[in-house]
Length: 283
Image 1: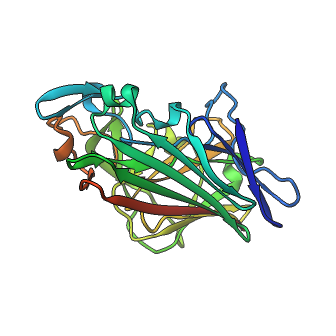
Image 2: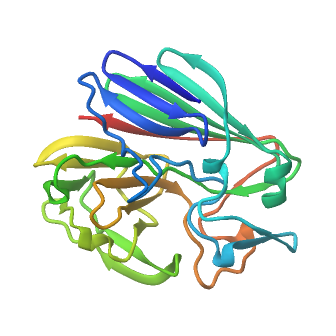
């Protein structure tokens, strides 16, 4: 099942499976979200929960007991319920169940709240700890922006002038190796060569937004003030770019396996609620 919300400027469609955004069109019917062609990558904008990235050996421990989680967790591969809908907003919910408790021993409710305002799509995450104990988790976004022109016609512009220090992946884990993403006048031209070693992973940034330019003109802006970390990713020769606000990231090779001690993890107290929001604006 799919749900569509809209206003005079935007039309947004979301799959109930994974509560995944799969279409963002302007009022000229121009599509801004990657079509999901499996020849490159069969998703559009998956939800990353209760982990972001990859665990060491896909394994973690809670109170000495081992559990396994796949890359980016399980929420993206589960059916959500549509619990509220208006013309320009929709709320989807996923609740813990027998299946999730085997992989992740915490009672939770995850809500995704989509809303459109002018030419902006807001995406809010709400995580509710329904258990009696502290709950460790990460959450993140993975929207793929469609690039209808040649990849090299696009440029990134970070909000602030800063040293863009990113971490390299080794065997899907965060290594200790870093590189500087060189910019000129705060601009980074897109080249597939940047992604030969998979994603660019920024643990921290001064910038709270990133603008994608098409032929030097503003095209799409992603605002992520609530998210300290950011991933940027594509596949070589693929006509999309993922701009991924994260709260958390992959394990390091030195990780102990204790989820509470994982670098970048969030911990939510019993019966408490966590909120974060990012937005995608058509420029």
